[in-house]
Image 1 (spheres, rainbow, N blue to C red):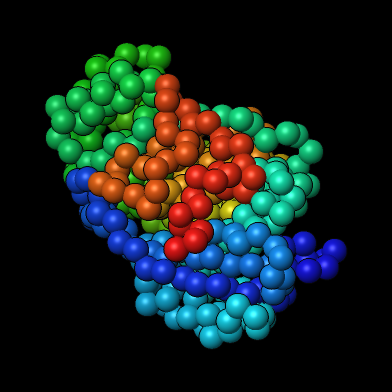
Image 2 (tube, protein in one colour):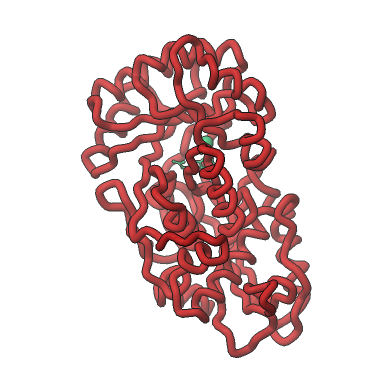
Length: 372
Ligand SMILES: O=C(O)CCC(=O)c1ccccc1C(=O)O
Ligand SMILES: [Mg+2]
């Protein structure tokens, strides 16, 4: 560890990575198919081979299409583990080719650094990123509602509002536009005007369909439509922003950010908001840096998970807490899982999550995972 390298990334001793698999309670329907199960690795690491330092905890949960494959992630982590407790291994996995592996290791190092400093992870990340504002102690979140028929979608939306959510994100694009219009109409009718609605098309539409969809969905006063076009069509997103089928519906970029990076999206004027998934961007530090660059460009950052287990989800809560005045984030995904690695230290209540106090990710909450 040096001043240039506060987290000891130049020489990291990865203690262990351990596989896990978690089923979703029921499949989450999206325009790109159903997510049914999440497989990943729990990671423990020490900084710079310092035997006296805290053991940090991380999670690498790849989602093919968004990150490297599970095999590529395992291989990247295996390379690090070729070293051992007493012999530091140089470097961390590459963020471009293996973002999930890099996320897991960089989170473990950040957790270790925060624990050694006796501060919450959000504070550690904020200081490293040059944020002067004190991290928030709670983060607003949206409910995540998958594809389904109009009645089913409206019932799920109503349930979320009864639980205290005032922002809902609905998956669209898995059926034709007219069917999604009926779903959104049913939801708006059910929840009234005071609930913010977001729609996430996961890149399902071509330019013509997107113009038609935005024109029709404008009637439901959407906070934004997320990724209406394929990830590569930054020019198309910029065009939709300027003239979205008549009425202006704000546009959020998600897959475009994961594939091309936040700077390309900002450069192309392709979005009003950017969706930042620490797992897809290669780590909490990189996600926070991206959020701050978006904010400086006048674009609203939203932090979400890739339906991660509790360790990475909690890390994403800390990232969001470090973003000043953050908008509702896609972090209410723990309840989509049928089981988890440990009890959630920051469960959702009244549409928000409390940020764990630390030290590190959540004080002693994950000690069993750290030891195992
Ligand atoms: O943002 C949310 O509400 C939850 C996260 C989510 O929707 C998601 C989860 C896994 C993979 C992709 C996505 C997505 O935002 O497209
Ligand atoms: Mg999305």
